[in-house]
Length: 248
View 1 (cartoon, rainbow, N blue to C red):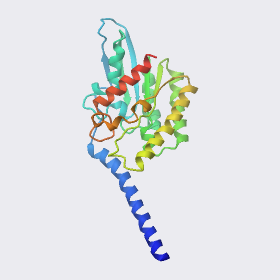
View 2 (cartoon, rainbow, N blue to C red):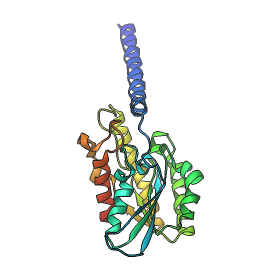
View 3 (cartoon, rainbow, N blue to C red):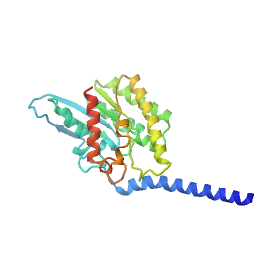
View 4 (cartoon, rainbow, N blue to C red):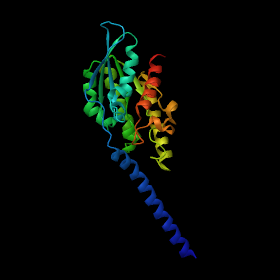
């Protein structure tokens, strides 16, 4: 009897391990198979105000695939571009520079994008980074160190108004099978605590994108075909939430 119980336990454990491995592998295979690319082809965009004037604001968008417009066909459907359109309604032309690429972690941003973003001499910066740190198993200690370095340099080397955006929970329940749905949601919450604390310490604006969009992907019209990145409608919702924080 005891032997039978042990065999059953081992079999259950083996099946559980197989399931966890398969469910985890499925996430990244589905995203990879969708083959979505950055929709940014220019790096720089000029959005002109409806009012004819010469006033311009330089806006640099720093981040990863969520800033690079993965999930939409045209960068004009990305959240930075839609946000820039809203800003241009304030009687200023907007010079938008996209400093982002798919898969970027905080360490990649420091190495590849930060100096270029600083050299843009931006008036406004949005920073949305961290999804790949979570999925890449970057420790919270390392993430906090990197994020602090990004803010330190942006504060010291630019005169920009800085908006740090919390990591949204992205991915549908068809992509994240249990227990990964709960795991990644909790990790997102924990990483966002770090971002919020660093925003307060550095006296920069914190935009809570997570709370109002926590259940966004229950509406499949708001996600792209990879079940991970937003669609044009999803990015439009993000731009509205972020812009509302600009006007506080």
